[in-house]
Length: 145
Image (tube, rainbow, N blue to C red; front, side):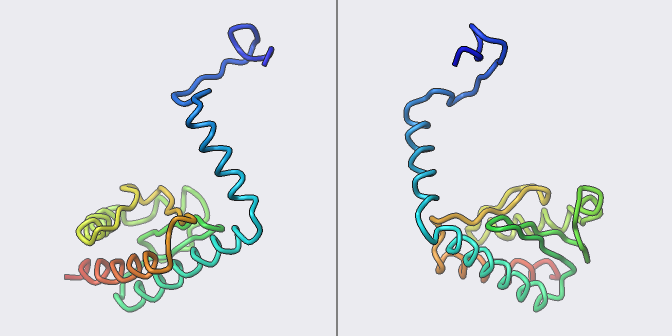
């Protein structure tokens, strides 16, 4: 702690820095993530979502691709592959915007930018993931209307 300002050379600040509630939540999260099998559950749920999205994309006849690392997914309206910002920037952001609003109509809240990540968490149930996939299928089909 002697290295941190005001006594030390390292400036550190943040809205929740040192906040007891935030620290408690963070510690509980780390403890939960140390439980055996947690990452397998996260990976399985993300794989379920990715597989469902792939089917929905195919059935809607929409040009889109996905990326996935663990429990994080990306959806890009282009043929792909997307491997970096340059390839992501070729995406149809207007199509993503329409998809975003179609998902909102169906009660699914996504990041408003296609350049942000979809996250699957331990709080998401299989039923919620299946409902998201169904909403995505409807939303993707609506893009063609």
